[in-house]
Amino acid sequence: MSGRSHQTNLLDRYRVRKRERSQLVLIMLISLLGIFLSCRSHTQAWYWVMCLSGSLGAGLFLLHFLFCLVGFTGDESLLPLCGFLCSLSLAMLCGISPSLAWRQLCWILIGLALIPVAALPRHWRDLAEYRYLIGMGGLVLLFVTAFFGIEQGGARLWLSVGAIRFQPGEIVRLGLGVFLSAIYSENLQLFAHPTARLGPISIPEPRHLVPLLIMWILFLFVLVVQRDLGSAVLYYALFALLGFCATGQPVYLVVPVLMGCIGGAMAAAYFHHVQARFSVWLDPWATPQGAGYQIIQAMFALANGGWLGRGLGGGYARFAPASYTDLPFAIIAEELGFVGLVAGLTGHFLLVGRGIYLSFRCRQDFLQLLGLAVVLGWGLSVFLVTGGMLRLVPLTGLVTPFVSYGGTAMVTNLFSLGLLLNISRQELWS
Image (cartoon, rainbow, N blue to C red; front, side):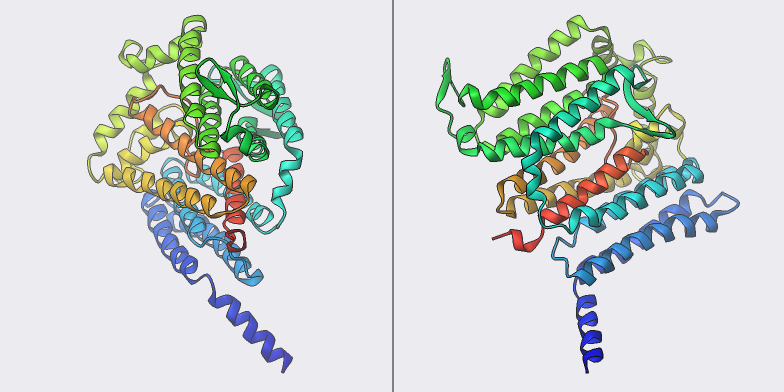
């Protein structure tokens, strides 16, 4: 009798999360078709299709069945949306080199294995107690990278520890989100209802601002030394938007924007590498074979793609330097056209929009702000990368979440997705 009851219980657990399961089936069909079209001219096309699409599907469905088994109540749309973007990444990379797509798949599987580590524990709110330790750890990583890192493309973005090479900036972004979320949630009333004044502007008491300002100045100092302007802009924008979301006070958005404009103008006047970025943005044709080459190739890719594209694996943007890390949507726009570009952007839009909705449903201040920090980081990255491709903003060298090639970014973003799934648990809504 107990055996039959146990079997019934397992069946009941399997029946839950139906929407997630049906969406994952659709994602796997898209993955199979996309990867097949990308490597159809390869001599081992079906081998790569089964390896890449099959392994991705196995990882996603194992995670889904684990959620069913433990009765996980987190959101059912986040994992399929992430799976769609990962499928898009593999299809794009497979057209360049199946072995490159295989390396990306290995990072995806590592990240999927870390999702339960982030999604299942019940006490992530305790992270707020270690905010200064996490903040100082991020600073140490940036200092070490600034002075001992590997320089690439004019910026020191990489650290090498033995055979392991990683990009600390992606990890620091998550740590910064934890730090800012903890500071804002701890002093929410003080920040939302400032009592001190600076001229006509109301500000919180200075003793509450000092730790935040000191940490932020140190972050910006290290970023200037690193010459990683993309991360500097991302961190600064995250700082401003999270402050506005936490307090609802426009001053936390307006003042950082004004200070950012002044700081950007000063940086362009006194730092040659910043000036060069702005010059390339304003007139890439001045150096068509030099600094402007990448953005010019992105513009050609957008023009060549048309409505439906040249077909997966048939574009030329993939031959541009670092296109599959810095400008993956340029490759997608050329090979899948305007329709493919809109599909990729829509996937990110839905992921970020769903994440914002779920974060606001959470009733714990720290976890709510942490969820917002995760999704705002994704949204800002997509905006800056796509804006750079369209010449709305200067190129930043940031990665596109879940689409760009890169191990550190993929693993960190998938772990962040696990945190967002944790925050989306229904028991945190009341």
